[in-house]
Length: 80
Image 1 (cartoon, rainbow, N blue to C red):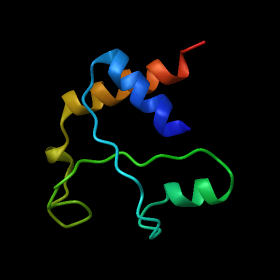
Image 2: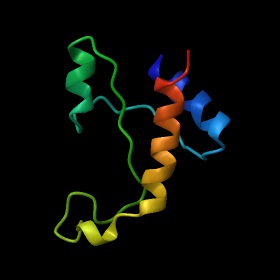
Image 3: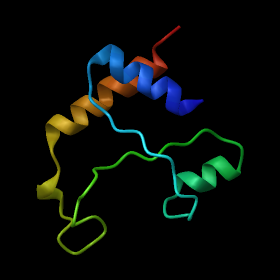
Image 4: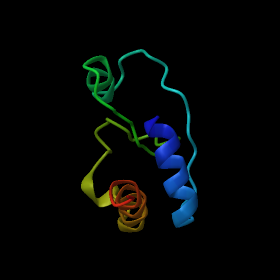
């Protein structure tokens, strides 16, 4: 259900997203939330060669990407 809500919010906010089903391999902490019966979702950048590597440093963060994610999440949590 959370995927539908996020995708709908992204459309409303005109933020391009690419939803991909979780592989179920336990590669992220969001899986533990789901196993505990809580809603969880993993957001990330596709094809990021530095993900979880030494080159994954704060200077690589993109402020504009955070603003887009914030708009989508606010659209979800503020919706009546």
